[in-house]
Structure formats: C-alpha cells, structure tokens
Image (tube, rainbow, N blue to C red; front, side, top):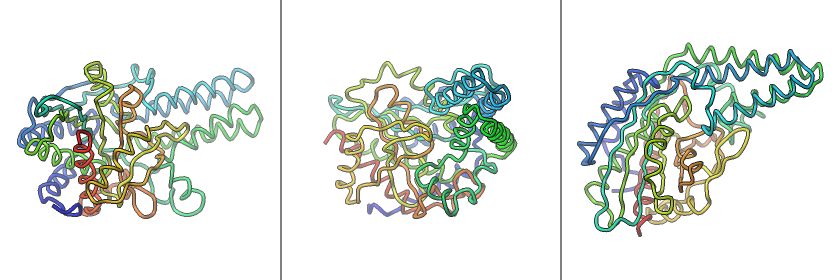
Length: 382
C-alpha cells in the first residue's frame, strides 16, 4: 500500500470516534475506551483489558489555583510576595509537565479508562514497542480561538509554542515577583485574566477531536492489526489507548504507575501518536512552554531511518509548546518518540476547536504518519 493511501476502515474509525463526546474522566471517555477495546480484539490483539483510574477531568482547576496564588502574591508584595509568585510558577511547571501534580489530589476527580492489549513476540523477544494514543478529547474555550495565533508576534510564538496560556502565566508570575508597583499590577491583572479564561474553558463543551486525537487512535488500531497479522520477528507490542491525556496525561501516568517496573529500559521503545491530521508529520525534539524537556536525538534518528524504509522524507523536529503522553515515558527513563503533524502555517489545524471534525482531517498526513509508525516498529528489530 502507498504511504499516501488511506484505508477506508481508518477513516471510518476516525468518523466513529469524532461522533462520540469523549469527555475526559467522564462517561464519554469510558464509552470510547469500551469501543477501542472491541476494535482491538477484532484486529487480533490479545489480552485486551480496560484499566480504570481516578483523575481530574480538567486542567482548569489546577491552572486557576496557581493563577490565584500569583494574584495573591501580587497583592502581598515584598519578599513574601516574590517567593509566593516564584513558588506558584515552579509548582505550575511541575503540574503541567506531569512530573509532580501534588495539588490534584485535593481536586474533584472522575473515573478515566485506559485500554491495554498485547501482541507477544514471534520467537525470542528482542524489543518491546509501547504504542500509545489517547482517546479522550479536549474542551474548547476562548484561549484556543484562531485569532490568538494570527499574525505578528503571536504567530511566531505559536509556531514553536502552541499552548497559549503558558506564556501569559509565566509573565504574570515574573511580573508579580518583580516587586515593582507596575509589575505587581500587571501580574495581578494577568492572573485574574487567567482565572477568567480557565472558567471559560471549564464551562465550554468537549470538541469532536477528529485530528486530536481520533486520528491517533485510528492509526493505533490500524497498526495493531498490521502487526498482529504480519509481526516482525522478535518484536513484542503493547498497545495503550490512554484516557485523560487532555487534562494532564493522567492515563499515561496511571499506566506507568501500574506497569512501569515491568518495562525493560534497555529494550522498550515508546511511540506516541497524537494529532496526525494537520498537514505534515513531525516529531517532538522537546516539549514545554517554560522549560524544554527534550527527547533523545538517537530515538528521533530511528524515525528518520524508518522514513527511509517507508520512502518518505524524514519528519521535521519541533519543540512543541504542550505535552504529550510520551514525555512521561522520557521522565521514567524510557526511550520515546512523539509523532504528530502540523499544517503549512505551523499550527495544529482546528486545535481544540468545534471545527476539529472528520471532514477537515488531512488524510494524506494521517496516512504518512501511519506509514512512519509502522516502519518505526519494524526498524526496531531490523
């Protein structure tokens, strides 16, 4: 099959998922998980099971509380205010990157669901592929409005940093910590605006999420089927359709907490599939708005080798201003790659918008990402 050819079943899977309201840690996420489990069984994946976990259904509470602390710091002033602002900034960075989400244990939680399946190696196992895509979808809101990334500095910023609340949050904290009257006023204003924007996201509906991330799940299903019917010698594949990625990678964290100790750091490779229908395949060289958390160059080199195997150009390497599930694998000491796509304008098309529908998916991009993912799997044991 050509690298640009789209399997009708893949398109049908995207359309089916996009028609579901896949709210994180809600009934929609659990329904999507049940559907994915049935599709994996039909594709020939063994040992398919659902793994429930508890997690916050939205990032907005944690964001708003950190912003509130910055507002309090701006009002307090002095050394205490400066320390509070910087502490809030550090805590926020740990929270959004998934490294330490201490605040969330006191926030409202719902039940999320991961789906885990396994394809055993044919012959002696030489490598394990952990294939990951999230089945929940994001809430929309004013912060995702396309006007925030059109023209001028906003467009240049979004080209490498796609999370629009991160930089104003950092500016608010640093302004509040400046100690000057003008800085404290700016910090307090930006903190209040952040709280208002989070309230808007909290009340906004869940988007269809066709590109983000029905395409990733559909590609995961297609690749799992191909590896089930034509497995490369020595490759064990673990398939993870994760929940609660949008509010903070909760499903990936739950999977690693439950199974991370069973994964061999030397032979396990994590491949994330996320937002594949935007335009052209890319891989993340780093993730994060405030601090860059890097992926190993040798792991992205493997994808370049896979691109040659598939007859495709090597994907560009981007620092993206958000976080995807594989970054938690990197923090856990595992080899990992995050495969995504961006449009010609340097953005995820229809990102977190109600217009992220199946009709607007770039199918050529999905096909190329799937071809890259399959070639990467086979390159692991070449």
